[in-house]
Image (cartoon, rainbow, N blue to C red; front, side, top):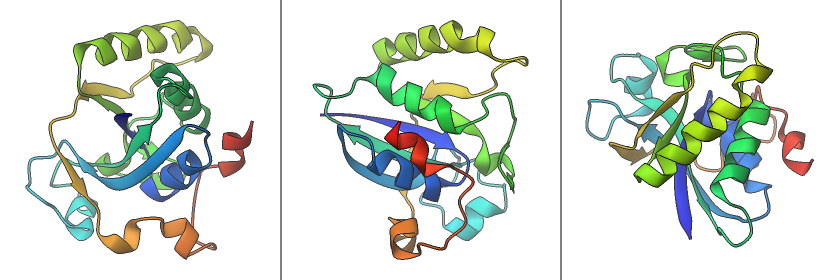
Length: 161
């Protein structure tokens, strides 16, 4: 099993979306790469902790590889928008891919280079090493399963294509 951490705006929809993808075996929403240890949702929402709302995706690389995970991510984000997706605005809603190895970094950068000509503006999605990940509060885990009417800017049906 491998895992990667991605940011695509509000983490509720990102998690619900990836749960539908064959080969994804687990997801956890949380906060990544900020400067405050173990922040709360309220603190992250202030924009002062530096964290992004993220989803850690554990996947079976025999079924789906990192490139496949990235293809799915770029179906649901506008990588040319800085600090916003859908109606969500703020630094915590930036898009990002947070890796653990240099091999992953190269693969991510190569993928972004390949797709960049598909966009009319520069891609501003962060590609950085994962420095920190903190689980979000339990009520955020599987939020859209627990609250089917919850807000989500992501078309979850994109996972079924």
